[in-house]
Image 1: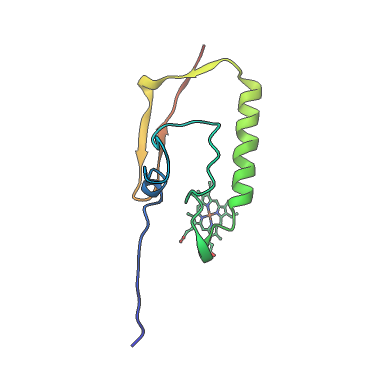
Image 2: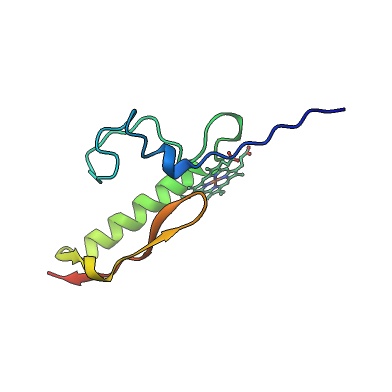
Length: 96
Ligand code: HEM
């Protein structure tokens, strides 16, 4: 009979592991993170990691080019939790 083992990794939890990342809940755009699990790991590493990274960079570059003076409206933010990821359901910005 074949053996089957299943495991689920909570990537968003692993990426906030304080044993590996100092102050893991803070965001610092200058961090150089070389070991995160956003795109998985090993043989099933995300095939779209490279285009997804490029797409994110292009989108952010364009937003920052068009709107230079803004701030996050922290009162209006809503966290979005799924079983595997943590992010924002609502992240409104206001002109500053
Ligand atoms: C920010 C965007 C993305 C994130 C966070 C992401 C995340 C992931 C993660 C965590 C895995 C591993 C799943 C596992 O271990 O079972 C994965 C696998 C995969 N991703 Fe992505 N992904 C993204 C975008 C994309 C895009 C744009 C494509 C295709 C154009 C893509 C194609 C795939 C494929 C084909 C796999 C399966 C690889 C395999 O099992 O060999 N992903 N992705």
